[in-house]
Image (cartoon, rainbow, N blue to C red; front, side, top):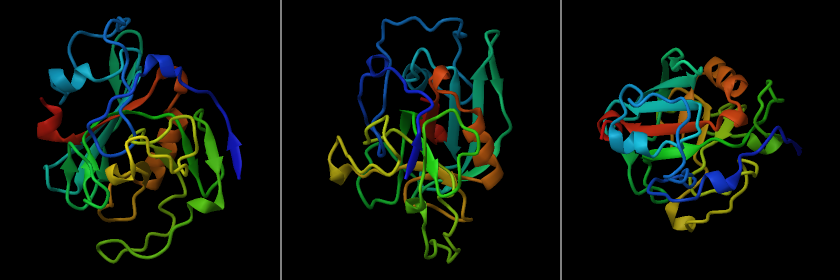
Amino acid sequence: MVRAVAGHLDPDEFPSASAGDGPMTMRTPRGTPRPAAPAAPLPGLGPRTWGEVPRRSRQVLVVAGRDRNAPVSTAVLYEHTGAGWRAGPSRPAHNALNGWTGHHREGDLRSPIGVYTLTDAGGRLPDPGTRLPYDWSADFSVGGTGFAGEPLAGSFDYVVAIDYNRRPGTSPLDRTRPLGPERGGGIWLHIDHGGPTRGCVSLGADAMKELLRALDPDHRPVVVMGDAASLER
């Protein structure tokens, strides 16, 4: 197993608190100013959701589900240029079979709603050029079929760990669950296999490779994910 460390977030900037269902939501102290950021939230994000975005984040991946109980989403990466937020292309995505939840439990087949840091990556294939720490390992292999009978092989060729109920700064394969095993874990961004997931968010292979190359730990990247109605609150 090879683990190339490209940089880590300062944990003091992201004290933990979580209401979602994957790795823990990592938040910035409320008193920290958001330098050069616009007062208005990103499109589709209401004041409550926007208030959970760490104040120093300069990369925000917004994954908006079609419906609370649907497995279909869209994903857009926003990057702050100093003059304002710039939106990348909108990408089709899948989330969990049963949709979304604000209180994820192991086996509920729902993706966690929330704002989560993105600190660690890995995959079965070699590092495609990300600046995140990357764990290149055959342990990311997966077989079998998905809910629609589609093959799962290759889904974990590239992954980014979503920091819900996990320990940031470790391989996505690390099974530490700070909230306890009953709250689930192993929530990743990974390659789409053509159907719903068990809790992760999946993107096309090219989109995952582009995302890995774009994410920069110096920009404190986060994912904001949930059904569109929940994100608008």
